[in-house]
Image (cartoon, rainbow, N blue to C red):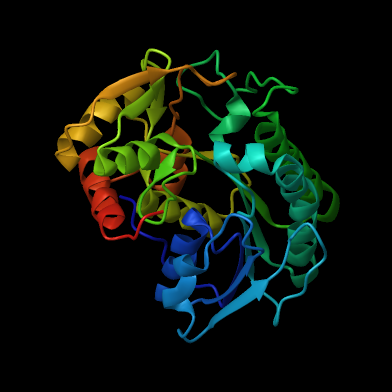
Length: 320
């Protein structure tokens, strides 16, 4: 049910297109016959993520910081704004850059879409729900975010981006949409980006202890990247403003995830419990009723299958 939308776009701009999700999105668009301009400053994106796309017809790379005004080679009919540090390791290392990507970057991407009369999609995040007091989380929930906590640079950047996108649609009539992406995993993640899946896989393959934070009973809902990309493109094609949750409604505890990674890798690493980060959410699970009903989308890749594919990719990589 997560088949990529058959909507045909002539030219899409993908900000953050050399990142983990962005590079998969660029590939899916090119495969569908859409010309793609990938905009990235490589602060967290990687050249190897898009190296296979460089010689494909219709692909253009623009090295630029979206927080500064930028121009693209020809008008797009679709602008997908993904540019932002997204992992804890990155947004804690680049706090101001993260907030600028969510504010100035969103404004510049919106202005491009407005100027070109293009459809605009903001890739927001489940982090706007903070440490939620409603479970599972649906789009009507306003969240429980600490605005001055260590995670706030990412949470509040995305919340501001949503507000700005909504204001742009109301004031200028720009055709906008918002998706809230829940935990996504798959090939091209970086082993040291601080997220659980790549951390556990890297540690397991290296024979190191798997570091589970707290008691490991906090939950996440893991969505394989191909499913996430299909959800993004379904939302772009639909015409709704949103926001709409895109994620996997099947929860897993971090301790269960660590044990599953050990099983799938065949590693004999031990599990080691470490201190839990400040403001780390206790639960995270999307209500995807809206995505199912309106987009006819839901994830199709089971956790074991997706993890096997991700582990195989990590095995084939040189040391990160």
